[in-house]
Amino acid sequence: MLEEKAKRALICNSATFNTFDDHKANDQFHTGRPGENQHPTAIPYNAIFHLLSVITFGLASSTPSHALHPRDLHNCTTCAPNIISEIYPNNVTATINATSFILTVPITYARSLLPSSLAPLILTNAYTRFSIPKTHYPIVLDGAFQHDIRYKGINAVPDQPSLRLTFPFIDLLKDNGTCFRYTSYIYLAQSPVALNGTASYGIGTIVASFDPDNEPYTATNPSGHLAFSVYAEKESSPEIPHRPEPDATATFSPASPIDANHAFPLAFYRNITNQPTFGNNTALCDQKIRMWNTSLSEGAEERQHVIADVVLGTPLLEAKRVWRGVKGIRASQAVVENLYLECGSLKGYRGTGEGDSG
Image (cartoon, rainbow, N blue to C red):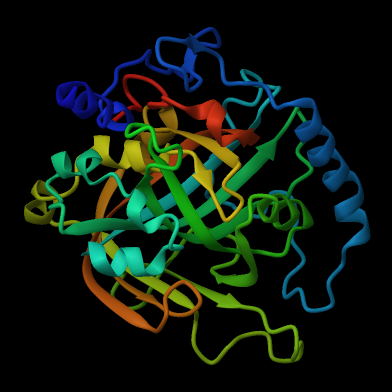
């Protein structure tokens, strides 16, 4: 019995599935049920209606007075185009340029940041194989820029920068095996589609401006490090677009050969970034499938381990906190998204392919 429970505890980080190749439209994808391989699940009818209604009416009717910058559909000049929209027309697809930073903290501190109902549900056995002791926990800071967002060939959603703090390896279904990641707040640029869609999951949405606002990050002078900052917009004072200080800042550079040798393995990042996401509505999940083995992760956008300094404040944390020497990874990826899924339907979900599973 104990042996069987131990095996189940590894469901979320030890499985093999078919590898995705962005040059082959007929390659398979794992949808979330053990032993079942097929293309990504098509969006349910009610989700399609919601998505299209928000696109149709939201963009036309919402012009907030405090929006800092008008956003066009293709404002990122360095992002690669969406290479999978024709392969998966019935799913929301995009290209994502993301940097994920691992904030390794005492597990008691991590639990203090979680809702009381979720604090006991951390599956410590699921991440200790990545050389993280049970006394600690990997909080993930994701800074992302989604580009060329499409559904059924329609590109009606502006490029979308975002920043969120996520808590992976949560045993939401209490099956001692399926890992989910919890998000309490997300910073988003002004977009009715993104804001309304995220609120459906019970995730607190914070309208924000990003520096830079049209690229995933910018080079700092004179050091040449890469960086981004996020500022919550102040509706009470539209004439003052930014707070005196950013809500979050990350400054990072490529890991040295020595640091790279001690970096978290790629399997760890594949694992945590592909766990289904939920918010305070624990019945509804977002399944964002990030592909780590396509041509987007080659050449100039080849995956790169980084070392960062991270500064975060409220409401992500209870008070401002600074981390130095944070491990992370920068990557450009193809993304397939399944919206508004019942979390229970994802029981046993393991990953996205042999190249993309933990």
